[in-house]
Image (cartoon, rainbow, N blue to C red; front, side, top):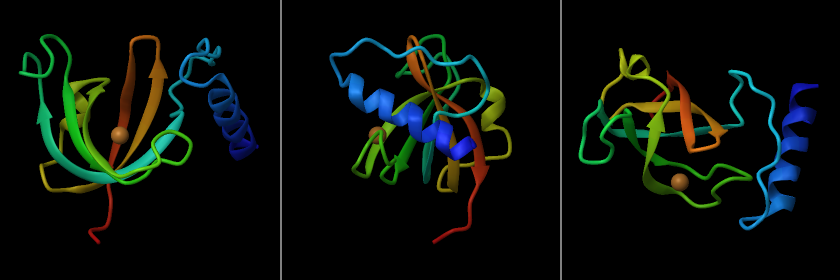
Length: 114
Ligand SMILES: [Cu+2]
């Protein structure tokens, strides 16, 4: 049931398109998307990228339904606590959640190196 629900959310997001209104999303800690990639930087605030929020720079693989190409980009992290026990160069999987002002990284887990 979880995968059906996620598929429905992705379809809503795609249908809305870049100019569409943001669909209503349930408030929960469940990620809207999951990605894989490599940590390049973890920057507690204040940093050059954000004055008040933690930022993680990830070299991420395609995230189906969200970003179809690999790229290197910064994400706001939900908390600096997510950085604990991780390091630059580490292969990770991560959870993303869309909130009104950001695409937030809400979880980071170590993945097997490729
Ligand atoms: Cu991206």
